[in-house]
Image 1 (tube, rainbow, N blue to C red):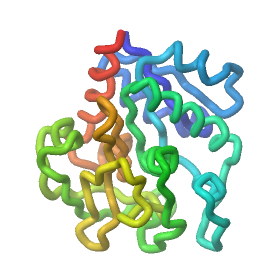
Image 2 (cartoon, rainbow, N blue to C red):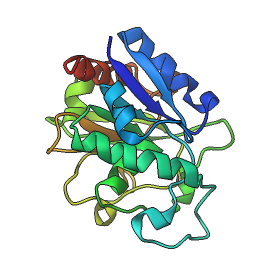
Image 3 (cartoon, rainbow, N blue to C red):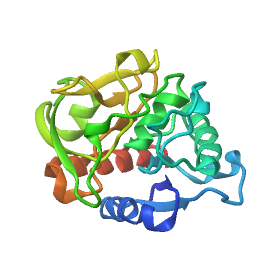
Length: 224
Protein backbone atom coordinates (compact mmCIF):
# COMPACT_ATOMS: atom_id res chain seq x y z
CA UNK A 1 0.00 0.00 0.00
CA UNK A 2 1.63 3.30 -1.07
CA UNK A 3 2.47 5.56 1.86
CA UNK A 4 1.63 9.14 0.81
CA UNK A 5 2.88 11.93 3.04
CA UNK A 6 0.37 14.77 3.29
CA UNK A 7 1.79 18.12 4.39
CA UNK A 8 -0.79 20.49 5.88
CA UNK A 9 -0.90 23.20 8.53
CA UNK A 10 -3.23 21.27 10.83
CA UNK A 11 -5.32 18.10 10.97
CA UNK A 12 -8.59 19.83 10.10
CA UNK A 13 -7.09 21.36 6.98
CA UNK A 14 -5.72 17.95 5.95
CA UNK A 15 -8.97 16.02 6.34
CA UNK A 16 -10.32 16.42 2.79
CA UNK A 17 -6.95 15.52 1.26
CA UNK A 18 -6.61 12.37 3.35
CA UNK A 19 -10.14 11.32 2.37
CA UNK A 20 -9.38 11.94 -1.32
CA UNK A 21 -6.43 9.51 -1.25
CA UNK A 22 -7.99 6.59 0.61
CA UNK A 23 -10.36 5.38 -2.17
CA UNK A 24 -7.34 4.78 -4.41
CA UNK A 25 -5.66 2.42 -1.95
CA UNK A 26 -3.18 4.80 -0.33
CA UNK A 27 -1.96 4.89 3.24
CA UNK A 28 -1.95 8.64 3.97
CA UNK A 29 0.60 9.80 6.54
CA UNK A 30 -0.22 13.20 8.01
CA UNK A 31 2.84 15.45 8.21
CA UNK A 32 2.35 18.60 10.29
CA UNK A 33 4.79 21.37 11.23
CA UNK A 34 6.63 20.31 14.38
CA UNK A 35 6.60 16.65 13.30
CA UNK A 36 9.24 14.99 15.45
CA UNK A 37 11.40 13.52 12.70
CA UNK A 38 14.13 14.85 10.45
CA UNK A 39 13.71 15.11 6.70
CA UNK A 40 15.57 11.92 5.88
CA UNK A 41 13.54 9.89 8.38
CA UNK A 42 10.28 11.15 6.87
CA UNK A 43 11.41 10.52 3.30
CA UNK A 44 12.36 6.96 4.23
CA UNK A 45 8.75 6.32 5.30
CA UNK A 46 6.89 7.60 2.25
CA UNK A 47 6.65 6.76 -1.45
CA UNK A 48 4.79 9.91 -2.52
CA UNK A 49 4.06 13.43 -1.30
CA UNK A 50 0.93 15.61 -1.37
CA UNK A 51 1.20 19.31 -0.50
CA UNK A 52 -2.13 20.68 0.72
CA UNK A 53 -3.46 24.21 0.34
CA UNK A 54 -3.05 26.66 3.18
CA UNK A 55 -1.72 30.03 4.20
CA UNK A 56 0.66 32.18 2.14
CA UNK A 57 4.31 31.26 1.77
CA UNK A 58 6.62 33.76 3.47
CA UNK A 59 8.07 36.00 0.71
CA UNK A 60 11.49 35.77 2.35
CA UNK A 61 11.51 32.16 1.13
CA UNK A 62 11.99 33.49 -2.41
CA UNK A 63 13.98 36.63 -1.64
CA UNK A 64 11.11 39.14 -1.59
CA UNK A 65 9.75 41.49 1.03
CA UNK A 66 6.35 41.15 2.66
CA UNK A 67 3.75 43.18 0.75
CA UNK A 68 0.47 44.65 1.94
CA UNK A 69 -1.40 42.01 -0.06
CA UNK A 70 0.25 39.03 1.60
CA UNK A 71 -2.13 37.15 3.87
CA UNK A 72 -1.37 35.22 7.06
CA UNK A 73 1.83 33.19 6.96
CA UNK A 74 2.97 30.24 9.05
CA UNK A 75 6.74 30.30 9.23
CA UNK A 76 6.78 26.88 10.88
CA UNK A 77 5.08 25.32 7.86
CA UNK A 78 7.52 26.95 5.45
CA UNK A 79 10.46 25.73 7.54
CA UNK A 80 9.03 22.20 7.57
CA UNK A 81 7.61 21.93 4.06
CA UNK A 82 10.26 23.42 1.79
CA UNK A 83 13.23 21.25 2.93
CA UNK A 84 11.02 18.15 2.81
CA UNK A 85 9.78 19.07 -0.67
CA UNK A 86 13.32 19.64 -1.93
CA UNK A 87 14.36 16.28 -0.50
CA UNK A 88 11.43 14.57 -2.24
CA UNK A 89 12.40 16.23 -5.52
CA UNK A 90 15.98 15.02 -5.10
CA UNK A 91 14.66 11.46 -4.65
CA UNK A 92 12.26 11.86 -7.58
CA UNK A 93 9.27 10.89 -5.44
CA UNK A 94 5.84 11.43 -7.02
CA UNK A 95 4.57 14.84 -5.87
CA UNK A 96 1.20 16.56 -6.14
CA UNK A 97 0.95 20.18 -4.99
CA UNK A 98 -2.48 21.80 -4.61
CA UNK A 99 -2.94 25.60 -4.50
CA UNK A 100 -0.28 26.68 -1.97
CA UNK A 101 1.32 23.31 -2.78
CA UNK A 102 1.77 24.30 -6.43
CA UNK A 103 3.25 27.60 -5.30
CA UNK A 104 5.62 25.73 -2.96
CA UNK A 105 6.88 23.59 -5.85
CA UNK A 106 7.58 26.76 -7.82
CA UNK A 107 9.43 28.36 -4.89
CA UNK A 108 11.39 25.20 -4.08
CA UNK A 109 12.61 25.06 -7.68
CA UNK A 110 13.74 28.68 -7.82
CA UNK A 111 10.62 30.64 -8.74
CA UNK A 112 8.73 33.37 -6.90
CA UNK A 113 5.09 34.46 -6.49
CA UNK A 114 2.67 37.25 -7.22
CA UNK A 115 1.73 38.15 -3.67
CA UNK A 116 -1.81 39.35 -4.27
CA UNK A 117 -4.37 38.75 -7.03
CA UNK A 118 -7.45 40.40 -5.46
CA UNK A 119 -10.15 39.12 -7.82
CA UNK A 120 -9.19 35.48 -7.21
CA UNK A 121 -10.17 35.43 -3.54
CA UNK A 122 -12.95 33.22 -2.25
CA UNK A 123 -15.78 34.83 -0.31
CA UNK A 124 -15.81 33.10 3.06
CA UNK A 125 -16.54 29.46 2.39
CA UNK A 126 -17.92 30.25 -1.07
CA UNK A 127 -15.56 29.63 -3.96
CA UNK A 128 -15.41 31.72 -7.11
CA UNK A 129 -14.97 30.03 -10.51
CA UNK A 130 -13.14 30.55 -13.77
CA UNK A 131 -12.22 28.65 -16.93
CA UNK A 132 -8.77 27.25 -17.61
CA UNK A 133 -7.07 25.70 -20.62
CA UNK A 134 -5.17 22.45 -20.02
CA UNK A 135 -2.40 21.76 -22.54
CA UNK A 136 -2.96 18.52 -24.47
CA UNK A 137 0.03 16.22 -24.21
CA UNK A 138 0.97 17.42 -20.72
CA UNK A 139 1.27 15.14 -17.70
CA UNK A 140 -1.73 16.94 -16.27
CA UNK A 141 -3.84 16.14 -19.33
CA UNK A 142 -2.65 12.52 -19.25
CA UNK A 143 -3.61 12.22 -15.58
CA UNK A 144 -7.05 13.77 -16.13
CA UNK A 145 -7.71 11.88 -19.34
CA UNK A 146 -8.01 14.97 -21.56
CA UNK A 147 -6.89 18.54 -22.14
CA UNK A 148 -8.83 21.58 -23.29
CA UNK A 149 -11.11 23.99 -21.44
CA UNK A 150 -12.71 23.27 -18.07
CA UNK A 151 -14.37 25.28 -15.29
CA UNK A 152 -12.66 25.07 -11.90
CA UNK A 153 -12.89 26.70 -8.49
CA UNK A 154 -10.68 29.58 -7.39
CA UNK A 155 -9.63 29.89 -3.74
CA UNK A 156 -6.27 31.63 -4.00
CA UNK A 157 -5.00 35.19 -4.08
CA UNK A 158 -1.37 34.40 -4.88
CA UNK A 159 -0.06 32.85 -8.04
CA UNK A 160 2.45 32.60 -10.85
CA UNK A 161 2.76 34.09 -14.32
CA UNK A 162 5.64 33.42 -16.70
CA UNK A 163 8.02 35.95 -15.04
CA UNK A 164 7.59 34.23 -11.65
CA UNK A 165 7.82 30.65 -12.94
CA UNK A 166 10.83 28.54 -11.97
CA UNK A 167 13.01 28.13 -15.09
CA UNK A 168 12.92 24.34 -15.11
CA UNK A 169 9.14 24.00 -14.73
CA UNK A 170 6.60 23.86 -17.54
CA UNK A 171 3.19 25.53 -17.37
CA UNK A 172 0.53 23.01 -18.38
CA UNK A 173 -2.64 25.04 -17.70
CA UNK A 174 -3.59 28.73 -17.83
CA UNK A 175 -6.46 30.91 -16.69
CA UNK A 176 -8.13 31.95 -19.95
CA UNK A 177 -8.98 35.42 -18.63
CA UNK A 178 -5.76 36.73 -17.10
CA UNK A 179 -2.95 34.33 -18.02
CA UNK A 180 -2.32 33.16 -14.46
CA UNK A 181 -0.63 29.77 -14.57
CA UNK A 182 -3.02 27.10 -13.29
CA UNK A 183 -0.69 24.08 -13.35
CA UNK A 184 3.03 23.42 -13.31
CA UNK A 185 4.96 20.23 -13.94
CA UNK A 186 8.59 19.22 -14.03
CA UNK A 187 9.99 17.62 -17.18
CA UNK A 188 13.01 16.55 -15.14
CA UNK A 189 11.08 14.38 -12.68
CA UNK A 190 8.99 11.28 -13.20
CA UNK A 191 5.81 12.87 -11.82
CA UNK A 192 5.97 16.23 -10.03
CA UNK A 193 2.85 18.27 -10.68
CA UNK A 194 1.16 21.28 -9.11
CA UNK A 195 -2.34 22.62 -9.73
CA UNK A 196 -3.84 25.90 -8.58
CA UNK A 197 -7.48 24.84 -8.20
CA UNK A 198 -8.76 22.77 -5.26
CA UNK A 199 -9.77 19.25 -6.41
CA UNK A 200 -10.27 18.06 -2.83
CA UNK A 201 -13.47 20.15 -2.94
CA UNK A 202 -14.86 17.53 -5.28
CA UNK A 203 -18.27 19.13 -5.82
CA UNK A 204 -16.62 22.28 -7.23
CA UNK A 205 -14.48 20.78 -10.01
CA UNK A 206 -15.10 18.32 -12.86
CA UNK A 207 -15.20 14.70 -11.74
CA UNK A 208 -12.03 13.79 -13.63
CA UNK A 209 -9.95 15.93 -11.26
CA UNK A 210 -10.20 13.12 -8.71
CA UNK A 211 -7.89 11.23 -11.06
CA UNK A 212 -5.06 13.44 -9.82
CA UNK A 213 -5.20 11.64 -6.49
CA UNK A 214 -5.42 8.32 -8.31
CA UNK A 215 -2.39 9.20 -10.45
CA UNK A 216 -0.33 10.18 -7.40
CA UNK A 217 -1.14 6.88 -5.72
CA UNK A 218 -0.41 4.86 -8.85
CA UNK A 219 2.92 6.60 -9.33
CA UNK A 220 3.81 5.96 -5.69
CA UNK A 221 2.77 2.30 -5.99
CA UNK A 222 5.49 1.83 -8.59
CA UNK A 223 8.05 2.72 -5.92
CA UNK A 224 6.79 0.23 -3.31
